[in-house]
Length: 165
Picture 1 (cartoon, rainbow, N blue to C red):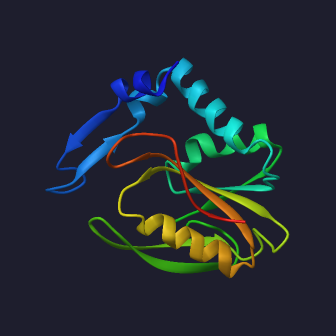
Picture 2 (cartoon, one colour; picture 1 turned 180 degrees about the horizontal axis):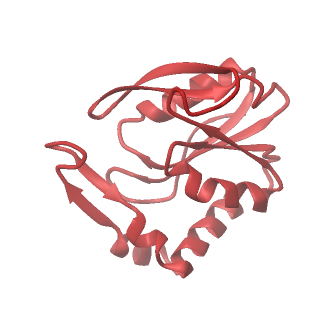
């Protein structure tokens, strides 16, 4: 399997969720078991020796591969969600995205200063969601974190960025 084969399966959906947005649809890749396994294995290979203790998955597509990545890394999985979706006490942050603003939350007891965190999402468009996720992780005292997005809006590559070690 190659990244070119994966790219060939991705779908661009014009004007979704609103006029002028080019939605990057990964479901065409996710339905292929070989591609799904390849993506998970590639991410795990990048982070296997980084001491990851928690994988933070961003709502909602970060929930698809996030738990599988966490299990392979021997780490726990922590969801970051939209307001009102988590049952215990949370902290929240507002962030900008390509078509407006939004908020996300994380449980107050989900992470601590000793955790080494991999923040996982499927897409980096403007970076607003990623920046919001980093703010929440840092508010919980985490000193070492990494972020991976399966694609960015231009070239659909496995991409690592915003790493703080």
